[in-house]
Image 1 (cartoon, one colour):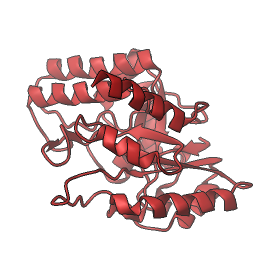
Image 2 (tube, one colour; image 1 turned 180 degrees about the horizontal axis):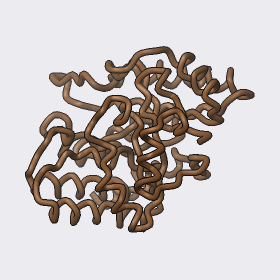
Image 3 (cartoon, rainbow, N blue to C red; image 1 turned 180 degrees about the vertical axis):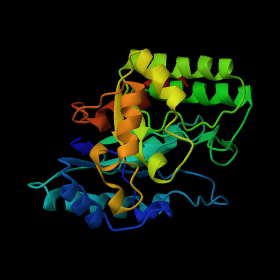
Image 4 (cartoon, rainbow, N blue to C red; image 1 turned 135 degrees about the horizontal axis):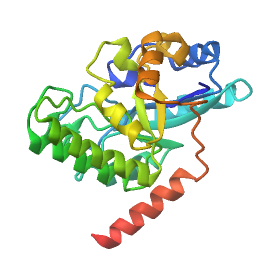
Length: 272
């Protein structure tokens, strides 16, 4: 495991440690690539202040800090600048325009809310609502279809406790879309560290059976969480039990992200 693309910073208000501490921890763990993907700021109304992401005003500091460290550490480790992004109908395009004013290498899709943080439901809470389950699958698939995401973070975040038939149907839709689009599904290390309801064995067994691609994401909220699969025995057993192989864990991102985003925005401006 030579790369991790899921790393947070203190700007999200629920992580600790400096960027330099994360980088040094990654080097010590043997990583060759470290991608920072803090929760993307959103162009929310002024009356709403998110407690789980940086503000738009912090974009310059985020990118300037990482750009400087990228240059400083260029001979020791590859540093990438990215974001963990919610796909929403209301905020996605305005958000994309803003973050592309600054250096950016990639985005990962991490859907926590349906339909969004202000008006929606946090999908990590237990629910038996088949309507919410379908809405989650619809948003995730639509997000992947933008072609702008390097991979799908914690695809099994939705904590559905209802009909197994309904769960399997909607997760099959997500897995089929990811497979057709060539988008890897993330096995999230944070779930093991924090004893969460994910990674979910029923999801990943199904995904492995369907021939999906996989990636491991540290989802690091503190420097010591930057570890390889060898550092977490339960994760190794989980991967083996689900029939998942991740190899070097390296993504090959060859297309300029800003050019891709500009093409997406131009196309969708015409369609509106």
